[in-house]
Length: 239
Image (cartoon, rainbow, N blue to C red; front, side, top):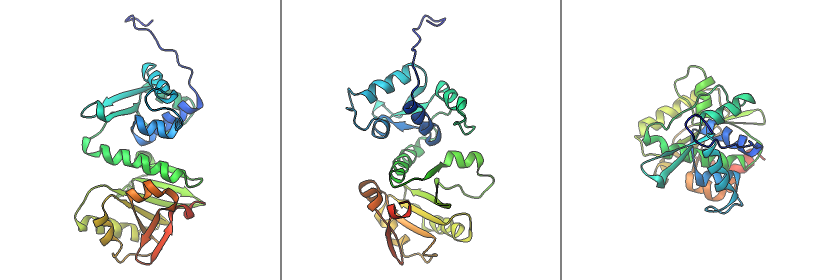
């Protein structure tokens, strides 16, 4: 027991735990459902191995919980003890323990977890999250929501999860068109109305492409990345 009389939970950290810690550290936080789907996909949601293991990691101090609004939106974050395990393996990226940020960003953050999972299932890629980019990306006007590195190429990923004025979209598109940093930019948009007019914007057709979020979630590699000149299947980029 510790000095407060609480029983200390002894947990032997596994490779799967480390991969979970890595995901939490890079993506900020996740829901239990996302954790089960990624790391214990065959486990029963309420009684299975995934739930039992996540409970032990929380009790052992490796993962912490934040109830966003209510337990109906329970978020899991990496705790200091989990970060120490990554640091011991040089997998922490120099990042620090964090708390949940502005609540308006939570749904965007959780959707980025889903987008990362979708792309990682398409082929061998290196995913660089926005949190990592802000740590090592240097001074820049705008940080992508993520960068995918594959076959010596770099693709910026942007998630547009709200309906903004066209001027904001166009300014960001202009920045990407002028930049030589990325070989491709994939805009994932949550609204069909936004996708409909974005496709008609005059941009280099080999540089900017778009996908509907719901299509990406349902079709994964078969999701069509579209622009004014045509479309390709997302999975064909990485296979």
